[in-house]
Image (cartoon, rainbow, N blue to C red; front, side, top):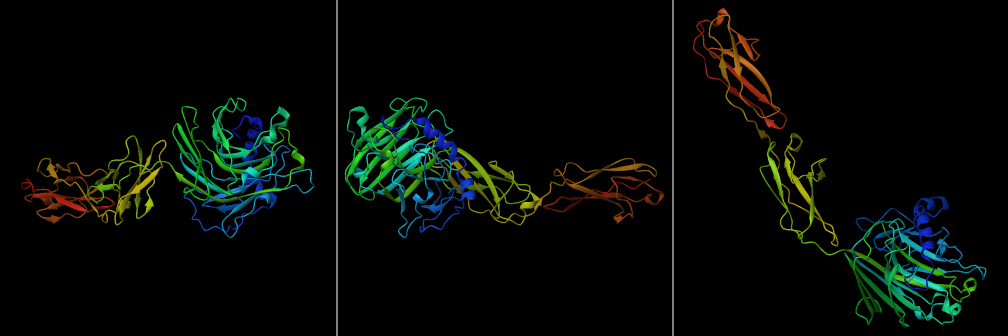
Length: 456
């Protein structure tokens, strides 16, 4: 959507957005399989689903479905080239019959970029654009994010048909801006600054999106060392919030103004580069882990001091594999941790900042735990026929206990219950009991009671 009062109504853009939802899936039906790109940029951590081609670290979908804003709703995926040997992508307007032009558009398959720095370098003398042609050189868009649709135009150039229908002769201008209420008409629901174009053959555009603030810059030449042609800073509560916006580039024909849309000549634009760097870096120290690396002990993640207001989340790893459900700042070591080394990853998020994850160093190898194992005592009357009871005390929770009774230090066959009934063979002997505790991940422990007085 252009950000000029001369652009087409915003409703057409929304219709196109609904079609976008089906784009990747429909590509399977049209036989447009993903192609190999002449681009060696490493893929981003989240490049988006596979589309028509990969470029500058992201996956992209060529538009082949009809709809706005092209005045005749006609688009051709063949009008978007695959990246060439230089890694450049070319968009073209074709007009094979001379009276039925076809536009070009491609968009990221990733949904949701949000705050950060966006940049693109374009090879095109935009001052020479035909008056009916619109060059949308980078904009974000989410058709579901009403009322603004999260549309931000980094750079859009057009004469919007020339303006003859209004008794004016509009030159080609460029715009920086965004929609804050797409339910309102152009000029009322958007915040836009337009500026004159030059005949510079290469332009570089940069946008920094922060909470409540958008900074646009357009430079002559490649990179940011050339002449700054226009800088626009827009602030306030109407600045769009991140949603599931995608990034689009398009070249299309407007039916507005006094132009001759049906008979435009072929037109091309070459996009040399695109980059996205997530928002403001967080202060994010490397976490440390404290505690004893033994089963049953508690490890604690110490995050250090992050940027004020950062929300932290935790994930513990065992030998590099995430432990299901281990998302607290502490970890009680389990039997499954024995013999492994643990780390913790802390992820910090804050509006307007780049989400950042930091991982601790590994712990030492987790060893078996030590059971809490008190010495048992014996209660009961020391006379034949009476029952003696082994009183175990409180062991580590979950410990399995077994028993063995002794007569004057010699194990009594079969006497392996918690209780023991004294028999005649016990008369004049002392009695004792050994309690053995076992638990997975812990060292097995046995404790023996003191001997009783002789049985009478």
